[in-house]
Image (cartoon, rainbow, N blue to C red; front, side, top):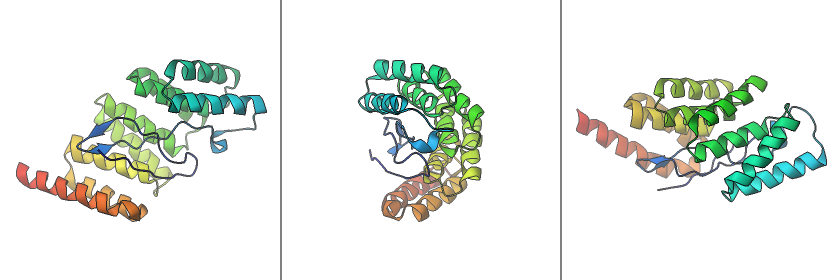
Length: 201
């Protein structure tokens, strides 16, 4: 199993969850208190609570983190981060419908967040809703065509779940172009995929 690090405009790095298939791990935004996810300025107390909640989430203290982010979401309905991090908590706990609801709350507040569509795609994929997951990843890439995480996730979807190897290959190659330091690993995935494709013919 491997772990990969990608960057995006607002959520930096990824939260490495144990959501893997064929040696590939889902690319999921990490717990964040990033200012880029705010729609207006917040108080120092709110920033402190966001940082504490993110710390607890990274430490997998989900109950305590959930309590903090629920309170923040109630007190600061304009913020995106509490809902995004609640979605991460629920995804990790396999509370998938609750995770989906939280991501959709983020998108109601701001429909131009590629990270939210990427996370929604992962949640939908975990539910076996592959066509909807594909649509979510495509939305993320429409917003940001250079979003490496969405290229990785849609490639995994095509490769492992939809068995559309040509589309998977296109997105794996886009990933390798965007993340040159991952090219060797991506080429290994491509070789594995092509071997499976030939075996299935």
